[in-house]
Length: 142
Image (cartoon, rainbow, N blue to C red; front, side):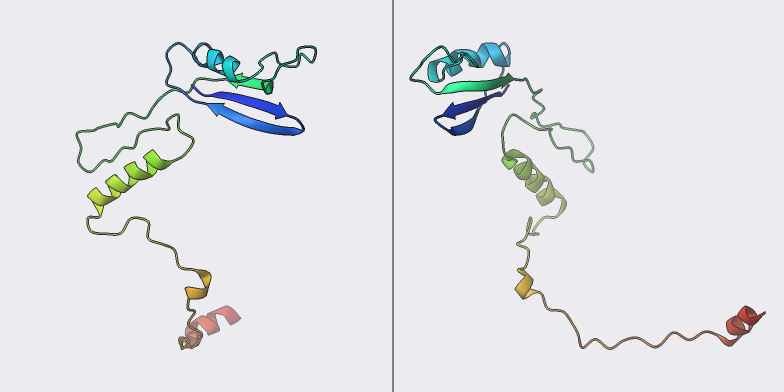
């Protein structure tokens, strides 16, 4: 579904992503929009345009596995696969919903303490010294 473009404006290069839900395929769905915004003549240096020049492009389709999977077993929790988004917001939300079912009333992903807030117990009393039993010591001498 996404479309990836690498653009050069002056000496600066940009990476631009186009994402859409599939109608036909990534190239057919997104190329008309890319051509409106960018010069898609590729490496052709003879053509001049006021639009930013696309140096390289890539079309690819990703199978949408974002539909929630339901199972009849209450003790089994299934998450959907990756979607076309560039973040993990949906996956984190889904994990939070499952966590609330499993651990009601518990905080989901509590804040980790800052390293300065961690207290190490240096005053801990060590346990007794390890002492071998006499018969083990005699058995080793043989």
